[in-house]
Length: 58
Image 1 (cartoon, rainbow, N blue to C red):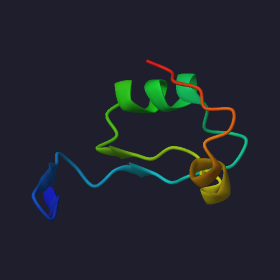
Image 2: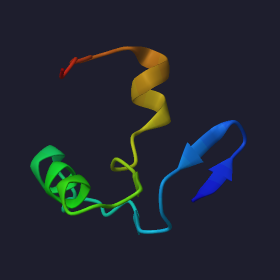
Image 3: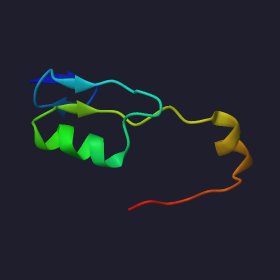
């Protein structure tokens, strides 16, 4: 177990961002196999600032 600030992460197995590879289904599979920390792909900061083409996936 380790911590980043106030957040406790259950183990040291992590999935780093991989552009074009780590889609939602892949990240879910990695979590089911026990990864403690999973990250999403990198996003464009300009897209966030401009708020164009926003999509919300739940």
